[in-house]
Image 1: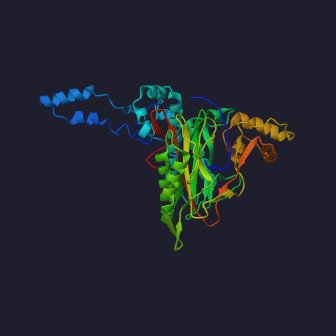
Image 2: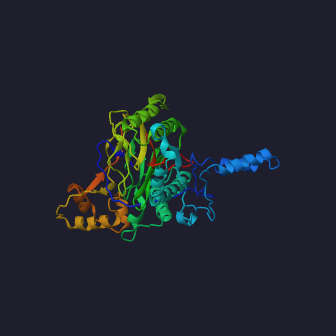
Image 3: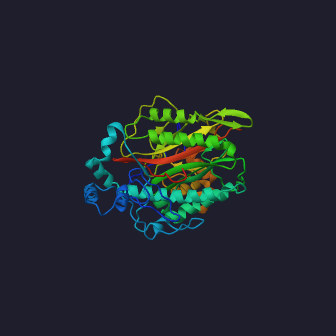
Amino acid sequence: MAATSNSSAFGANPNQSAPAIKPVDGASSYVSQQDGGDEGSEDDKDEEEAPVDAGKDTAIKKKKKKKKPKKKKIAASGIGKQSSPPRIPVVSLFPSAQFPTGEEVEYRNENSFRTTSEEKRHLDRMNYDFLTDYRHGAEVHRQVRQWAQRNIKPGQSLTEIAEGIEDGVRALTGHQGLEEGDNIKGGMGFPTGLSLNHCAAHFTPNAGNKTILQQQDVMKVDFGVHLNGRIVDSAFTMTFDPVYDNLLAAVKDATNAGVRESGIDVRMSDIGSAIQEAMESYEVELGGQSLPVKSIRNLNGHDIIQYSIHGRKSVPIVKGGDQTKMEEGETFAIETFGSTGKGYVRDDMETSHYAKKAEAPNVPLRVSSARTLLNSISKNFGTLPFCRRYLDRLGHDKYLLGLNNLVSTGIVEAYPPLCDVKGSYTAQFEHTILLRPTVKEIVSRGDDY
């Protein structure tokens, strides 16, 4: 979910998530760089292929056994296929609760010691619950988004698309969010963004919206999954006309450059510079015109803290002077936005996204509907973002006066859609990364992006 250059944080609260297994038949997988492959370690392969009748080979085999074994994938026994649409809780596909590890990348240079440091490994093991929650949420995100990528087609309404994704997330996390407090345990980390064309972020249909996805549209699909407030924030862009391929390639390349550059002790300015360089090396030909792809300079990535999608740090997507560093234990959403327009967004259109502020002021509310609504927001969402459709789903009606009162008193923050100039096209890709003590884990990585 996008952060603007001057956006405020969404909220906060503390808590804590497990090793890798290779899912089969419908459960997606991502092989870590450390793990070496799908079918087991290289050592296993060597032992299978080595002749058994030579003394020399036997000695070699014995020597191999003395080597420190690599981490292996745990057998994914009992894992079955996900349904379509996705409705089987991910814990049923992974009964041991050992969810797939994301892409693991070893730290470089002065931080390379972390990979083998016993102290750092001990710290990593202490993060078991934290990692389990994040990997669980990431697997839900992968399965739902891959279903969406296969099934979203022009002619569908944006409401149908958003509800299809959200129904999948709720089913796969096992949290429908209709009982008081259930959504705070797990489910949607924030509303499904379906921003079209010149609109870059923060649009989801409100009740009554009749927008239909068209063949020529460029749609950003941005949604979050959370377990115990550990939010996986990941986004992709869908098009149905190859004319936009270069725009998508530019943004995907830029996001991967940002992910690659990120790490412990890395300055935000260096990440922004790498992103901009990758992004702006592309051009798109539209209507006979060759247009440069520009980084949207007032949109950023951001850190994520428990129950708060936007923490206190921003990750720029253009070069600048921010000397803030990433630190061990932090979680970041690395997201980039490219545009064929001005490369600058402004608030536009009807607001749909809201969130209660973590440090909301304690002010008297004179509108009775505002008091009732605030009580419901606190119990059902806490500081997690929500949208108007979520209030409708809980049975609220005629709540706009109360909601606007909560916004005007500074208790709730409104997040209107963010748009470049009309006629331009924008794209987005995003991943969540965990700066673990031993390695960087791109927890949301999948076979799709």
